[in-house]
Length: 119
Ligand code: HEC
Image (cartoon, rainbow, N blue to C red):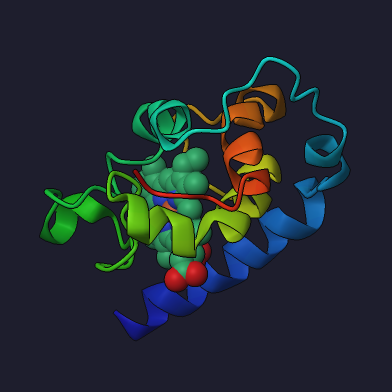
């Protein structure tokens, strides 16, 4: 298990180095975005909660930390900046599953700029 974790960390670091382009998020057009949790949650639901879901347990989480859940607003809010950073660089999701195009992160970025409030 420790070995796997180490391999994963190396992989993740490499993926970040190759693909990270935080500018892609800074340049997002946020006009017309509501900046609400509801809109952000839809993006998280599509790409993240199959691992980072409050009801996803054990091996089904694929190693996603138990306390980082993107269907729980308070949890998502605490990790919001990191979520966009990782997702825009292609580091999340870490597997071959569908990953959001940077443009699709606009609802999350707009929510962050509102202070990532929870209803
Ligand atoms: C295939 C399962 C999987 C999917 C899907 C996934 N993640 Fe993760 N996530 C992980 C794993 C495993 C880790 C822990 C290893 C790491 O940090 O790289 C993690 C860690 C994270 C962390 C760091 C948590 C911390 O404690 O700081 C964030 C933030 C994150 N993911 C965001 C996302 C976002 C946003 C999405 C959707 C775009 C997403 N993840 C989709 C598996 C997944």
